[in-house]
Image (tube, rainbow, N blue to C red; front, side):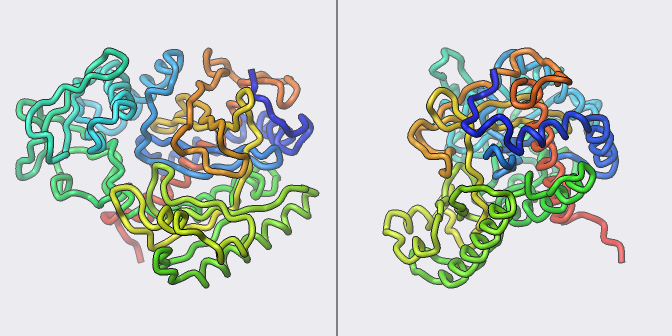
Length: 431
């Protein structure tokens, strides 16, 4: 089953699918050479949007939750990738400590932590969950609606190491995106592997820097395939020093939104696309679908209501929004039954391990789907790990479409590795 695409099955995405499938050996060789030069992030999830005329990543998460949405059929891939990743970083690893987010009562999120524990246990590690939440002062068992339970234990910090009372890990896996900044308890751990590193957290990371790296990757990929990189790349601008509550910095926002809408219109005209362009304004750092608004016309910015201003005022952990990225809006024409859907691809080390559709029955094709009311539908075509089917009509083969999603997901992951290299505080500099 390929999700229902409203656009005609002869659209540019099917031409792109055909080009990608024909170029599989060249693409895989290109990725292999890239991974010889660059280290992939430990794990990643990428939100994609398929407009029928372009397929592009709109968000790349380096601390992915939602592992519980992967189907049991996908788990062997995740376990194999976990084995490969650990073997590369710490082959003698025995103990792994997972550090989750502090919202310790969110059962859906904890089901994701339990799934990570399961994956790494099957990869051959002793896995425990260590909380840095100051409210967790003793081992705490949380029961989940599924009937399973998860044990959260308070972390113990010695001078150079982090662990639990009777558990000394060689590797620490962060599933906490550090939106409120890197806590001191995680700093200066020189004897243990911290994955991902602290500078992958939102206290350092910026979406605009990521998409700058992605633009570079997309240009090189486009050159190799002989395609316009715009087909896989969302254009963007950024605006610093903005305050929605006080209305400061709005001139910068208006100018950049107007400029980007003009560039998109030009591209639509070039490709004969009869859609109304839009942009998405997002907090330049942060996650959980917070601090996001869709702008279809520059005039909309003059009439922002109080509710929108409040929504754009803060992100997770109450962090104020000061910088925004203005991103080309990519419609999603994928449907699961009648609900708008977008694919989310999950990767570990350099491997695609699965994914799902984020589905929102109350949202439109040009809106953010990562919002309350979203549901998750497994990628039906990942039920068996079937490989691409050469010779199939474009748009008709599920494994082919999934392969293409995986290629774009890996481009975003490669961009994240560029980005992490550029922000690494311990990187050696050469004059």
